[in-house]
Length: 268
Length: 257
Image 1 (spheres, rainbow over the protein chains, first blue to last red):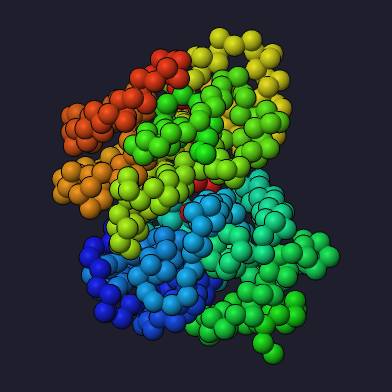
Image 2: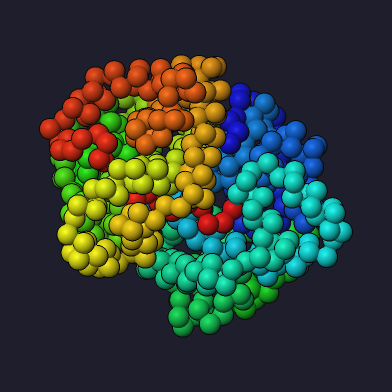
């Protein structure tokens, strides 16, 4: 945990991020929605860029993303969204009503604490692990050793040596399915996650759900989850989302375009 | 009208009780007896499907999660000045509260229940306890209560909890060396959120949270405990049990990442 220092509104923010996905996706989309010009510093997670000394000098926790604004260094992606909304001009990304703000944050907590880790565990077992496993074993070992946070070190160890347990993966799948039902129910009550307006909750949820129609087609589709598909279509149609995926360098961004086409959303 | 559903003034319930007393605008309270499993009654689950306390309702809107409730209260009652309003200050308050919650809520559950709740549950009618726990509809909560009923806190779990408590204490000591309070030199909901859990850890992990290892944290906690609003809450007639018997199974330790 790193605290921000002073604020300097004049400075152009720099964002260290990986793919426009999960935690990195949140500030990318928030900045683009606000129309804030920023320096994009692509940080290649699959090359362990975020565990190299030059990155650790900026963010000693070695997590991505990191937002540098003036003298402030911000490293928590969900709270970063509130900072971006408050510190810059542009359309509001937080509802006015305190109850809707509470709901926005409730979704943030649910996504970060419950749904996200489960989805991430599955994603790392099928994508991140296989993408890095073939590197030089000595290099991998050294990389694991310099990861500052124990929780992250444990996650990388599992991904690299493929030591995921069957039971924990099954539990994660159960939680993802439960999450899908919770999203569908929530969107049955309000047009957007927090209530009547598009907010940081939608951005956070989108970063974790945008590929579900492709990853879990039997559970997320127009018949089974019509509200979720309709919401995805509306978010995919936003210009900021289109811009965000341009910052991707892996096949993940192409996959997003495939989903958009599949559900019939967004611009042609 | 605000209405708070809470258990004893400890842990997560204590956080919101302190915040409401600091605001001092009046609210209705509903005591939910967690050791009678009232938080899993059909009526309560309608308000909060996760079966967790505390729960705040405002004109019929039900809201859960103690950290988020204090953010809600701080924003709804700006005159109480319980949080900075500048973007950096607000970010730092949110980040402290999240860091505290992530590391301490689960650890307080593990260490507090192992020491204090296990013997309390041992005195229960075991068949009835088993039946009550089996009927908890939320899988994660059921698992946490099953662990407490079985006293199943292995060395690895305890070591992980202690590691996290030490990490928080270390960071709080560093922060309190720079200022009297956690954020921006002013008492805020970050202090309240941290205090409610540290207060429990003084009993649950006295070998870590004590004035030798954590002198600034202990001093900071005593300054908070001396505040009129906090004294009022801690001595309120709602306090039905001794301080050392107020531990409930907390949220699970992080599974990934």
